[in-house]
Length: 183
Image (cartoon, rainbow, N blue to C red; front, side, top):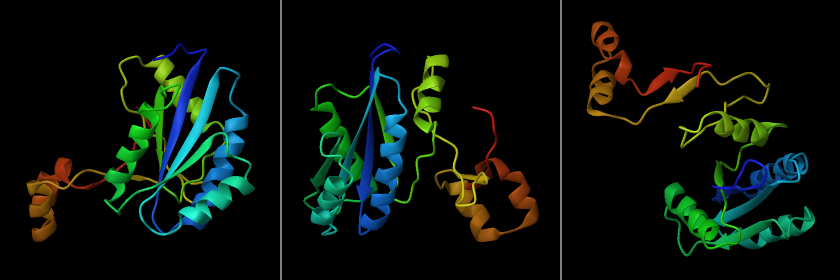
């Protein structure tokens, strides 16, 4: 990883029939990109997951003036979200410089002012952190209060039974859980 004074962040965006949302995301990312200090480079790669919108995405990149920091890649087929992100990772690892950080963004995301700086500052303060996620907010700016675990046998049991006593006993295995404010 590069020093805190010189680092590269690659935003990876997987698109499937949401080019109109990607436009707004790239505009917010462009604004955030301009606020970074001289040692932080922010780039983006948009993977069109075989939705037929690659040409539209390329026009958006030109309209936003992002040809030098935004790449658009056509996926050969829609392999899903992870597949698209893996294409973005391969792109990042084959570029120069190789990114120090990957910032995975959904097309309906808006990058708020200071978001990238906050994530990088967290990494600077927590050398033991390997993955960092930002908080989520609704359109009204209010924090989104829920997080989701991967389904498990116990969460599925609770979902099928929907019985108060069982739900209380399995509360640490439920898929939906309240978010906290602590790292």
